[in-house]
Image (cartoon, rainbow, N blue to C red; front, side, top):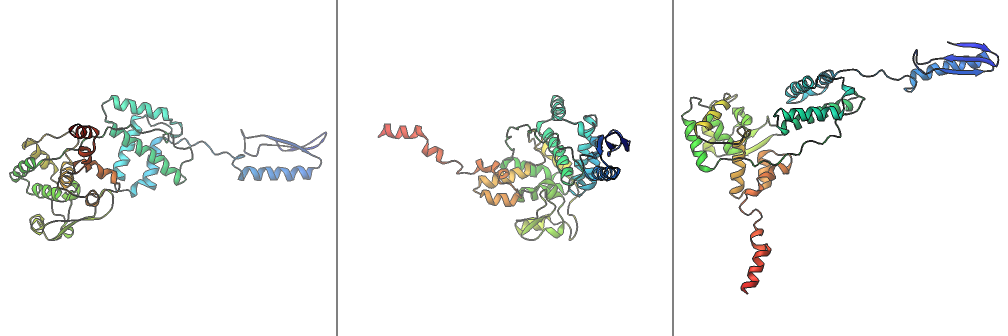
Length: 333
């Protein structure tokens, strides 16, 4: 198909986008005009997306996970963990062609996960990781077919009361830890109880960040450095060597000590019970909520507000300003 002579002049009959593309037929009085139009149409086809549509992106979901990790995920502190989780999601979903994934597909996957006994919190994390993957690839120009799960709302979770140890439980735990073969576990426990650190932060502390009057946490979940004051005598007890990491991994020894001490904890709260214990006693002893936020390193005050109800004067006005008491006062008067 090209230029040919017809009764009314010279006809251009072309498919600028190639076979299967849009066909153009147009007649001109002269052959020169026809040639100029042919050249113009072919140029437009090469530069205009409407005339030169992209081939459909048939990459599978796992291919997008690999692209995300190579371009972005490898730079995240938890990138490898997310990468593994995302590939597990791909496998469970049958690794579909990514552009064919729909919101209905994901909600069905989510329902099946919940039926299998997976917690709503875990499913919400998978949802967040997958949504972030599509968003990030779009921002980098690596994906043009939208985010299929952008409009899906996460499962609303019931607020769970955070377990903490009372003073008697703390004493029993420390006494049990003194009998442990692991010589580091008691030190890590005392450090976490004194500073509100996450277990991993306390366990991986180095001598260079342990000072006579404070501890500096640098490898934190938020990536922010924070400093927490401690007593000099505690610092002396905690320092086991002049340089390098102070303690070996000892979480298994801690878990065993909790069990031997007869302390029952809600499922999933073992790892953070010392952090919750610090925060709870801090507020019960009259601590300030904003100060607690800085100590714990929370970027969002709503995380710290979970401990607000433990303050001695929390909602104290309810006792003095409720209507039943005022009715009683008037009756007595």
